[in-house]
Amino acid sequence: MDLSKFIIPLGIATYAVLLLAILTGLRVIKVKVKWHKMIALIALIIASIHAIIVIYLNYF
Image (cartoon, rainbow, N blue to C red; front, side, top):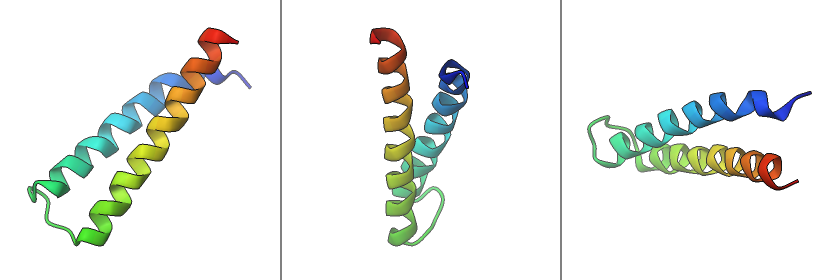
């Protein structure tokens, strides 16, 4: 399995979920605070996985 195939999709997913978290935080999209926090946590997890793969492929 080639990890480099996951970099672009994870980057796009990170951007999309982060944008969703911002829009729910600004109340453009109205959801309960519980869902906003869940979306933000998912964005953090996806961004972390994305960063770990990029660092791994560039330095190891």
